[in-house]
Length: 351
Image (cartoon, rainbow, N blue to C red; front, side, top):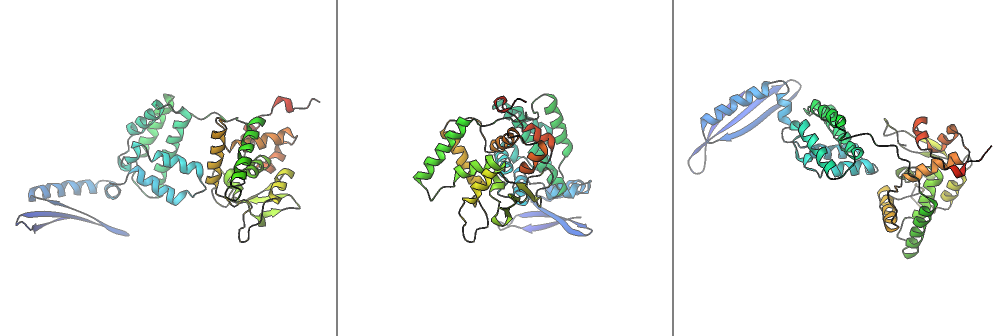
């Protein structure tokens, strides 16, 4: 219920402060105040706000009235993404820089989402790249609804997504089949060797890390989580903690088989007192060094993750069956594993 208090100002004039307080069962009382120069204005606003707050979801909407999409992204990063979530972190950080991030989350409309994607497409991005923006918008909005009880209109998001799909403004990305050539690998290796000679004590041993990625099929962040205690030199296996999983972020610990090349690389790594990790480096730093190398050597569109693709393909070329390859790569799905298999004709042996 609203109460209006008359207050004298320093200059002798009066103002009228409206306070609306609503008692809620099992929750803190909701209240808001606003000041007006005239009593009639205060009374009119009080009546209108009482009607708005009495409508279904009115109090909840008022609670989140000033929260922007940028605020929701910041909270999502704080609560659900750690520093190892490189691709997620970069995607959301980029999304935060666009005008759509300044929109109040309770007022986000399908038109604004469509305008954002049209702007992105007009800047030259592909439909698959624009799809990533839509995907992360959906994740943020659904999290805001489910985890934080923000009154987000998900129907607006779904309507925008449906139209964007029908117009071809967004689409699923093609399965990636990029493999580094032998010449590209040698150019990158030469870059790392030269860098190591210039500053031997200050740099990550990127040559070893690159070769280990190709020999083990491990992802960038997984390499930096491997520990000496999880290594079994006799069985030639190692545990990878919190392995990537489509539905399970934490606790997905799996043991994988090591090739002889991967084991040799591990065994030549120095053991640092008090450091449990085999490769005690940051995944972001590895990514930065990788991009510097590919840029310096003018190698286009070669990602560190493509080394995992290369490793998987080499295992098939070596004659391993799909169920055996899975013991090295830890792919959850055989269908996904097949997409990584791009054998080179010259490697096949005639029978």
